[in-house]
Image (cartoon, rainbow, N blue to C red):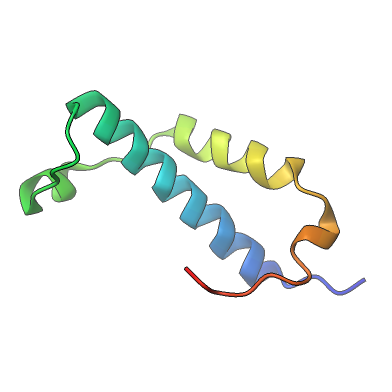
Length: 70
């Protein structure tokens, strides 16, 4: 079975950052993110755990046809 681990790690990191951004927007109750706010953004273990759960819940064939459209 072919498995591009680099792509999986990249997907995990992207999901983790998205979780952190989503959490930050909800906490601040605004979509406006300035340069200072962006520099203060911290990724928490919870963000990583949620991303890991999402990746593990996907079937293996989900990643076979994936493209980098992001």
